[in-house]
Amino acid sequence: MKKIFFLGAGKMATAIAGGLVKSRLCTSSELAAFDVNGAACAAFTAATGVAAVSLEKMTEFDVLLIAVKPQMLADALKPLGGKLEKKLIVSIAAGVPIARIVELTGSSRIVRVMPNTPALVGQGASAFAAASGAEEEDIDLVRQILSAVGIAYQVRECDLDAVTGLSGSGPAYVFEFIQALADGGVAEGLPRDIATKLAAQTLLGAAQMVLETGKHPNELCDAVTSPGGTTSRGLELLAERAFHAAAMQAVRAAAKRSRELGS
Ligand SMILES: NC(=O)c1ccc[n+]([C@@H]2O[C@H](COP(=O)([O-])OP(=O)(O)OC[C@H]3O[C@@H](n4cnc5c(N)ncnc54)[C@H](OP(=O)(O)O)[C@@H]3O)[C@@H](O)[C@H]2O)c1
Image 1: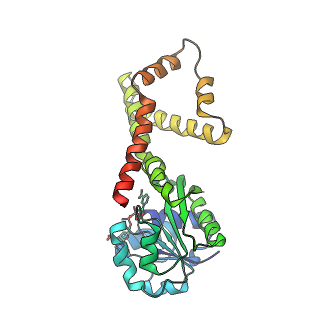
Image 2 (image 1 turned 180 degrees about the vertical axis):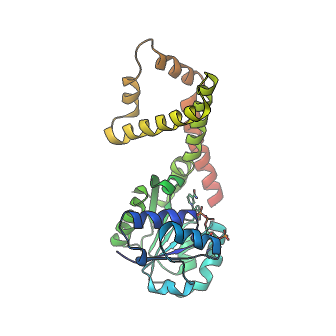
Image 3 (image 1 turned 90 degrees about the horizontal axis):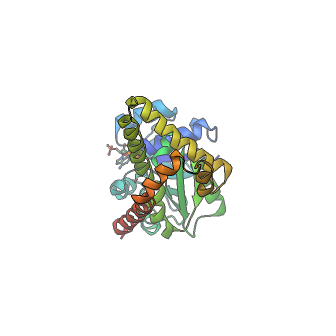
């Protein structure tokens, strides 16, 4: 496996490095990180077994994985000026276009990634776009890295705003839905902790059915809806309140905002 250097050792870097070590794709000695924040370095090493090192060590690595906040990106890359032209650069910085990363690093081997927070528990949904200068081998490597913390699809760069609206912002919509289901259960007399766990597991189980059976969600929905039964009543109410349209519009509004922020 190629040696990967993380610029920024925060939450996402910890999730990805941890996933790589846990899945045995990399040994901890094939990874390292640099972060300006001592507490973040300590937490990163404690969680992953990977060393936090000085920035100069980056030259010994094949891949630079940028995991600082977008507004920190230019400053974080400045000390590496002139040392990145030949490296594969993987950026998870939300909203920063490939063209900007080329400008800041001088490398044409860029892969831009939109991960999501469930990567923190190994259940991420990521999409990535590659610059024309990225080689097939680079793309395979990025797919392997992201697959260590979930699923990953290659898309066009222009599709990353849609990905942001769907899987990037999506966990928040799902948390909201879990909260609403649990509130309904509590209103019907269930204890809060049981209601929350039942709601979360219901989403997890239903999601697993979609992924494992490959069946269309409509087909799975029909299979649990008996004529005149309880589920039919619940679905009727969701239809009356335009639940489906609201969820669609949430994705589209977030994608629109992502486009605005990127322009
Ligand atoms: N978390 C998500 O859900 C999510 C989803 C998709 C994409 N992303 C992207 O992932 C990236 C990382 O996010 P995160 O949530 O992991 O952020 P984070 O936990 O705040 O980690 C970023 C780390 O970088 C450090 N840092 C700041 N300036 C630096 C510099 N010049 N050199 C080295 N390290 C520096 C920060 O230190 P200080 O705290 O002291 O500034 C912090 O420890 C972001 O670009 C974000 O857009 C995150």
